[in-house]
Image (cartoon, helix red, strand yellow):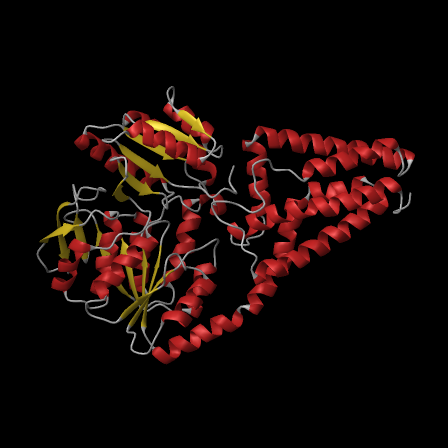
Length: 529
């Protein structure tokens, strides 16, 4: 067998051409999944299990590769059946079907990091293609393309430490800036509600202190470094940092770079189950934020966070406890009964300080009551006057694409909750949208691809959400294939399955008419099936 056999050369040449769209697809997925190794293979698996045509295509390509490999090994590289590998290469250039190389919802950005990753990607693919071609002839390059997703993950694993070392200068610059400006650092984490709570905190603190908050969802090592380097100026008294995680140990590392003076957890939920499998693991990872902080703010209605509060107090930390249950012995107690629903601000009371009396407040309709309570607890911990806190709760800022209510040109009301992807928030948005529809006397329409990254409970939670949509009397447009089966199973007869969001939006607008309400619940980028 020789590497220069005609069929092998043809397969290598075609594989080089096919590698262009294949690389674009998987590197775009890597970029969208924050360059975390193993997640390209996870997304490839999702396409295989959700898109029947893609599964069939990969099955056919695999069969062709096996046929070609057997033919080459048994009969030589020029065996006619080796042409099966050439056919496999051509087929693999188009798979997964529907996963576009450039993307529409989020364009593939050719950054310096992508270029470095591409170099390693090419070296791995080329080296493996040549090595396997020497063993399997034309089947070798086809096999490499067939395994491109896990090979991309290998490239990510190789480049990860290189990228971390290369970015160290930006982190060091941020640490130096923090040392120069010396603001108090407020660090916030949680399974969800981080961004909303951060915005509330900045609003509550800004009347008393010069406050800078990390923008958008800049909640990892480089994002927070950029926020400090770009935004922190002399005279800044408080820096509010949102801290996110992909796994255990990450918040502990973030806390070494951006040591919190005040640390807070919003809620422990299911948002990270895909990566961390259990809520107890999530809790332990989130609890890392309290390790270096001198003051911690915790909602003690969750028994795990109540125990954490006791442990922090035993270590000599100042602990500010918050609760949504009237009568609970906590530093901040918010009774937001009837107010914690989108679109319907209502009367609430808040007690700030154990000896204080509850005072009425008008809670705006922008978020979960627990986020408001934690934000008030942080402001209390930062020594903002109680009257200032209570007065500013009435006009808390909203967060983009989180239960935003707008009127469409057709006259329908649109509830934009596309940045939410947790079960609690989804049901809450549905309840608010249903009430708006009842007030207007119009149709309620829900457009959703369902919720992701919920691991072992994802099917169950999406099925339950489909059932809740049916119970609310809404019409469901299930977008894409990622959660289609679960949503439709929960909803039952009458649901609509739509491949793309644009088509779903057009149908929803038509269905809602001029008096209806359209809830856009979550939105998945198009690297999901």
